[in-house]
Image (cartoon, rainbow, N blue to C red; front, side):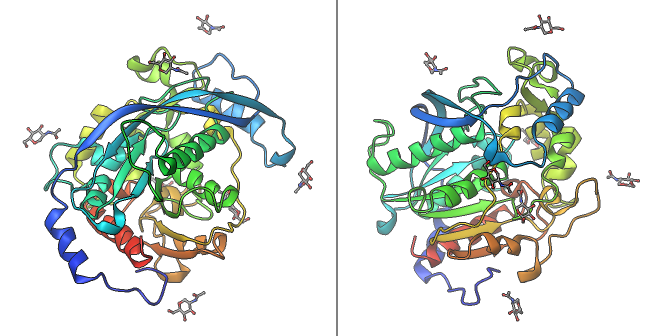
Length: 391
Ligand SMILES: *[C@@H]1O[C@H](CO)[C@@H](O)[C@H](O)[C@H]1NC(C)=O
Ligand SMILES: *[C@@H]1O[C@H](CO)[C@@H](O)[C@H](O)[C@H]1NC(C)=O
Ligand SMILES: *[C@@H]1O[C@H](CO)[C@@H](O)[C@H](O)[C@H]1NC(C)=O
Ligand SMILES: *[C@@H]1O[C@H](CO)[C@@H](O)[C@H](O)[C@H]1NC(C)=O
Ligand SMILES: *[C@@H]1O[C@H](CO)[C@@H](O)[C@H](O)[C@H]1NC(C)=O
Ligand SMILES: *[C@@H]1O[C@H](CO)[C@@H](O)[C@H](O)[C@H]1NC(C)=O
Ligand SMILES: *[C@@H]1O[C@H](CO)[C@@H](O)[C@H](O)[C@H]1NC(C)=O
């Protein structure tokens, strides 16, 4: 359960509402956003003309030493960026949430479809794996986006442009435009509440926003599949990377060498919990759809890791069997993130001394929380937390 000792019960009307309407698919529209942003990116060295994993490892070992990043040189970047988005409407009107939107950000080697259960057609019941559908049933709008460099968003220079600082500025801009009702004419609402939910690498972004912009980004955060010290996250690089996207996937052959891709078969054991907790057909479906990328610039960008002055609600949801978050590098042991306030996820409280911090560790759950049989439980916990804090 949540770390907080007083976990209020859902009002009866809410609980009934969630059962009644969560199986109705929301009305969604896909479109391209045009986002103006500028940032100070890191001045990273150019990438060699090589497509193998060893070249990536060599580049990273020379570029990302355990040194003082604040003294590294920066370069300004700016432009108008195409960000692919899916906007979904509530399936149930909840008066207090008519101007509330959730901004949903995926992780590494993924896309916005993560928040829609990959659009997997064979779920046991409608909405089983769709966070967005659950949110819609609780009265929230959602905007899921492909991060710059991923999915259908612009794939620009993977060293100089697609980096953490610029992505961060794009997120800030999207949040500000959601509030002012100027994101796109296709979203006429001026939202007075923006909740950000993020997964894995996306959670590093959400966390950075709470540190660098504690009063001007989102009003509440749900970080998933992360921790204060995500022990195994670096393992994702060696486990997931099969080489440059251009040689891994024919559909990505036009991309520069510093766009990387992987093969899901090589790292599904890191993403999914033990047998019986996930539908093997869903994994097979994910493999058949997999053509995702990440950039060396995203990987090599330093991220803030200090405490946050954010004072709103922050919920951390990390699966109890999340190898990438809880297992030390090189270890392939069956992972246990622990339970209660001694668990690895609970340590994130250190980052949020001023926030209303809670955590939730679903059992029999791996890194891809939304895609296992426990997804409904995690969706419920997230929305109960928001409800508890008046969102
Ligand atoms: C990169 O290497 C490939 C194959 O070795 C070669 O065909 C290509 O011209 C090189 N590109 C650049 C920009 O040097
Ligand atoms: C890092 O570099 C900055 C700027 O050069 C300096 O002010 C700071 O003290 C350094 N921090 C550490 C931990 O060395
Ligand atoms: C954004 O999309 C428009 C229309 O498809 C295209 O003309 C433009 O080049 C794109 N912008 C970037 C930075 O790729
Ligand atoms: C969905 O289930 C049907 C019937 O079992 C099967 O034929 C089909 O291949 C499945 N589709 C996917 C995408 O798993
Ligand atoms: C953040 O800092 C803590 C404490 O110094 C450290 O244990 C942890 O590994 C760091 N996390 C990241 C993501 O660098
Ligand atoms: C885990 O590591 C052990 C010892 O290094 C090895 O024998 C085993 O095959 C590994 N298991 C997996 C699933 O990688
Ligand atoms: C952890 O939980 C135990 C038992 O519920 C409680 O006694 C203790 O005060 C808690 N510690 C912290 C740091 O919250």
